[in-house]
Length: 125
Image (cartoon, rainbow, N blue to C red):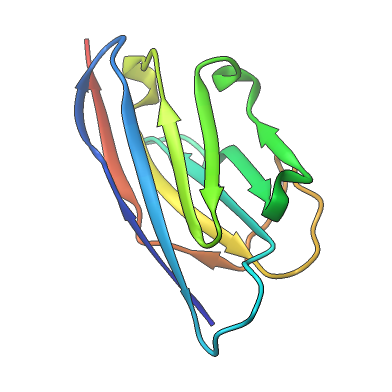
């Protein structure tokens, strides 16, 4: 079982930056980090979409086309981060941290095993 806790959401002006963090705890503990972790987002009236994800050691990294060059995903064992730069008002959404201990292929259709509660990011124009 994995529990995920996000932080770092809030209000930011268009063009600004925000860094999200996610702490993962796993019971029982394992001597290795979670295989895959990522960030999804969902805006009101829109479908949930995968923003960025990566596997331990960086073997796979995925970015949605809309955020390439602006967002950076990183992790330190079971801590996950998303540095968001050049934010746009249409990127206002609830951002969810996700995790998967299965050996998965990351992509837009990746269905993670575990989800956090989400953190709201609001980008003002």
